[in-house]
Amino acid sequence: MFGAIEAGGTKFVCGIGTGPGDLEWAQMATTSPDDTLAEVVEFFRRSARPIEALGIASFGPVDLDPSSPTWGHIAATPKLAWRNFDLAGAMGRALGVPVGFDTDVNGAALGEARWGAGRGLSDFLYLTVGTGIGGGALAGGRPLHGFTHPEMGHIQIPRDPQDPYPGGCPYHRDCLEGLASGPAIQERWGLPATHLPPEHPAWPLEARYLALGVANWMYTLSPRRVILGGGVMQQQHLFELIEVELTRILNGYIAVPPAFLSPPLLGTRAGVLGALVLAEQARLRSPEVA
Amino acid sequence: MFGAIEAGGTKFVCGIGTGPGDLEWAQMATTSPDDTLAEVVEFFRRSARPIEALGIASFGPVDLDPSSPTWGHIAATPKLAWRNFDLAGAMGRALGVPVGFDTDVNGAALGEARWGAGRGLSDFLYLTVGTGIGGGALAGGRPLHGFTHPEMGHIQIPRDPQDPYPGGCPYHRDCLEGLASGPAIQERWGLPATHLPPEHPAWPLEARYLALGVANWMYTLSPRRVILGGGVMQQQHLFELIEVELTRILNGYIAVPPAFLSPPLLGTRAGVLGALVLAEQARLRSPEVA
Image (spheres, rainbow over the protein chains, first blue to last red):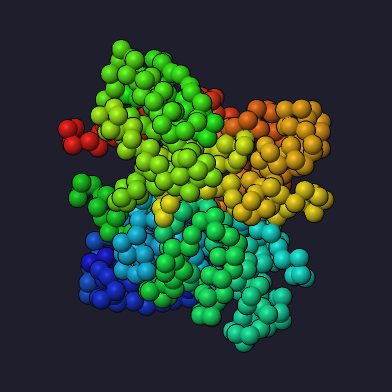
């Protein structure tokens, strides 16, 4: 039995189980580290099912370098109370189990790989388009890490010359996230995405920007599938619009594989289920097992 | 002792050895498959050093899917005589040894990883900026593969509004390769890159485009280093210009690690040395060894 936390900027989703079939879960608001973690620890202690390891898929930026003294810490987040907080360490000490730790989007990618739209695929990309834009890529079955972790939403793409919106990213203004996140749609059109009907001109523009991102990631990563999740992608008509734009942008240079764009099959549970995979990996790495 | 071929569109570089210290090599023009391969086979047969396996780092596009019936073939290249040619199969049959096969840039990345500017790094990017722009990324020590192989030069970036050159890519016009390859520089300014002095306005523009590419790849891959090779990067003043532009584009969102941009340490031998690594991997995979 494993424990899982999807640590988000607005809520923590906690789960206990071994997979989608037996997952017992709850969610709590993200407030201060002390208050939130007290609730999280209570959730795990209250359960009749003791856990062997814990996985955390966290909002970021985070330190993922196993050789770093601040591995498992949240880094320079705008949420000041969480800045430099040792999330993996605090939870590991509180529950006395090994901890696996990765980004929220890498977690979601691992969940979809095991039980969802990435099953059987060792090389694919999970994207979330919502408050921000983030990507978790598996290469050879493992999440991409390196100097730090990817921050895919911040790539620069050509902006539409007819688009008057300057972009909303505080760092880059008109990077992809600055042009195509949920808040960017709302600022540009004066209405939240959920209030814009499918025939609204917001959607072809949104599809064009997202297709430019997907094309750049295809050229860079060569994924076998791109799973598109997050609040904005609840607009299901977007999938077809993105595929049309993508085909136009690629212009025959590389093909779009069949069933290439897919919604996540685990829905909003991808992150917490991916954290179960992180827990299992931490258990396999822990000295008692090795 | 291993055999290595860097198969390029204009020349084949062939080598025999175990590394940079004992590499015996020769090059031959790329003409027809029959004529070129006759010379290549002659090179290996003439040598007093019999090889245990052969590695090929090839121009592309190529089929790298081990489960595909056309694995090791060159695919839809504009060089018609080589289209659908079974390069790995033809060489394996001629020399009677196991064959490892990858793209030219993945080969160069493997060479730099073993003996060059990527030593000790499991996650880095090798870029070549010359006739085209190509990238080979190692993630967890292995080249990125997926649906096919990356074609990094074809990403779309914002073009400079002052740049009158429409771009030279036959598929995308103003993708990165279309704007910043050697032929694009020559077409834009009417002179080959080697004739443009360091103070020419060509260079800040070139640096801006390349920095946009590097930034996008940082956000996507999180490499620990970017090795910049190829003919255009012989202009060593470009390194500093790119770093300045890169820092400006990232705008503090992520840091540029120390010694992040580097020339290749193996120079023009990176590809053929990387093919030696491919040969060694093929030998380890071959049934007699396993």
